[in-house]
Length: 347
Ligand code: SF4
Image 1: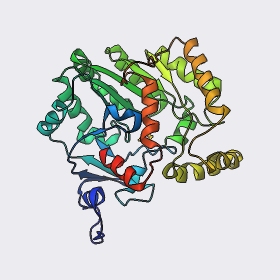
Image 2: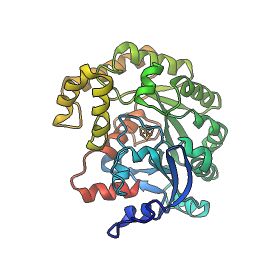
Image 3: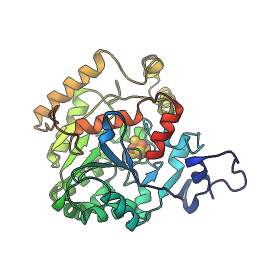
């Protein structure tokens, strides 16, 4: 059990399930717990309601300073943002029940794996839930799958993904925010080095699995220079990626409480500007997003990595534009706490 003697009596829903989780394993400061869930597949929200999402884990050991998914732990009454990195919940997986969930979807529907966790974080080596999910899809047909990760461990499943792609569409989105290893270590303390992620891009594309590289989030005066983004895009192209995209940082309260102190500590000269820019809104407004969009467009044209969805086309796991919109819609401020609670319960 997560809370041995002090389980609050008033917990309900996902918080009560989390409190009742069985401890699977503890490593260093990280605990792995098993979480019972009614369904593994949930709905996207807002304009992304037509897509489905799967998050095999809750929490993520990589501990990126800008991570927007920390709010998923708040509803399990785990409000210390660090617990998102140290208490990792592996969702209980039953292949038969999951197959039935998949078969309840319509053919051609889009399913995104890893919208609020990294499906190839260290827990996957031990529990293999993402792999077992893909094994089910390998025996199905007609789905449009997207996978988002920052882990080179994704290459383990290159052959399996190639099998999935025989009867479905699949695309892997690998996030690389910078090629500067020192900066990456600061921003994404326990994620694999950018060079390892690029090696995984090459292995996947060599196996015939299409890969997009996503330099998200773009952080003002940290990783947003044309030179920095260009280097990521050029490396993506060299390693076989077929598209590249990036979008500005947004900071919901759960991520601001980690990211802003981080900026104060590591980039004190930027601290005041960050506080001012994010004081009133989680989103950067005005000229900056347009400037970044133009910069990214120039870069991807330069390297021949242009892959956008036509405005009238259906949402697709293969489109980076749709992926960015999905991230934003999942993290966008809900009208009420109850709305967010429902949204998190679906993750
Ligand atoms: S890899 Fe993704 S889910 Fe994990 S901490 Fe980083 S941003 Fe969050």
